[in-house]
Length: 486
Image 1 (cartoon, rainbow, N blue to C red):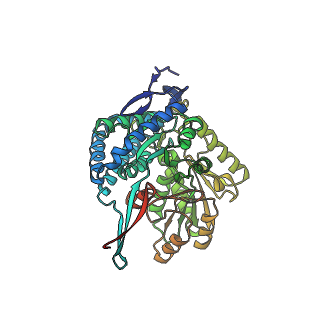
Image 2: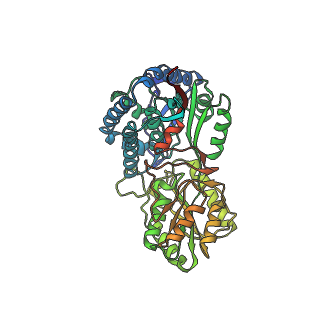
Image 3: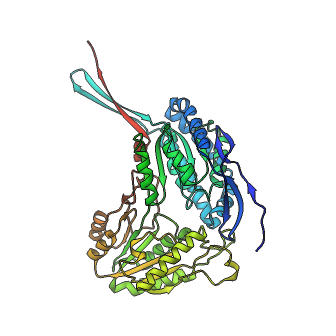
């Protein structure tokens, strides 16, 4: 194993410039080789306070701008950042592990989201109700909340950040972002680029650190009026409890165990391809990944064989190596957790058709790799069925009909995404209406659109991201009654 020079970063970005945090250093590891290549000092409570105060100072001027002007400024900043795509993409791959192709898709999507809300800046408006009484009319004003905390996980550091930052800034709020401690670098660089592109100082700030110290201090800070969080359900529940003091607003995008139903009349080749992409993209490390497949018995063998074959053909390799189709898992801890879930499931039952452990390739021995894995008909009370599985392992069950498939799909604490594959419009509508999830794709790969609201049901979260609906979670409305005449 070769040694690398460890580069030290400042760890914060406040008032439009770098800020060096005062906490203990956090290592940043390249998951493809299992070596630390950078470190950033974690944020202390004092650093969090400085970041929030920076945002609070910037809020009056930023919120006073016309919505159109805020959109224009954000648009110029996003276009400047886009000119540095070739710098951001390899940086994201190095700290997160995903392939260069997937990193380019992610960063491009993040900047597209910023531009989407730039376009929506001209659609942000209140309401008017005439003739409440003779000579009386009503006006509904929409006002920004103030300082917003955006807490983002490691699996999609830029897209999940921009999902929050874009509507928050356009609505007139200022933001303090906390990236995951293991993936801070792309976020810090993006903050610099947006500032270089004209985003005013203090409008968008970054403070790195652990969730227990930096994250908690950010959530509890009295000047933070809203927390937008993506991450696990247990952490989201803790944030919701902490946010109760001060009645802070929250948007929580939490864990998922998305079901996919494949009916016997479906386009089986397309469905199997969507299942493979939906499960193994980003090494299966996505809240909205397909995590449970229910396939009708008459076509089950064909679908299982097709998905297994696709999993076997995936080229696993370092994210920065050309031709790699699936990179490593993000950390040794994530791989241990997945390995434990697979082993505990197989101990209870089920048939392993491929994978089940790290690949044999000695070139990959130092990274956090795990082979694409398929398990058929594990018990419905096994970890693969009941827990969120955050890695490249897919359970598949045979079912008799749509009623059983929907019942199994809903037998979960989670309700994030779902999908159904059928040529029968009645079946498709029945599934869309009855599956307990915030998103359902019909004969479609699991792509999220900025145009549509997205949010989980049950333990998968609270509130909406994307769409015009996101503005409702970054603004307050105020009713004004106007009486004309004496």
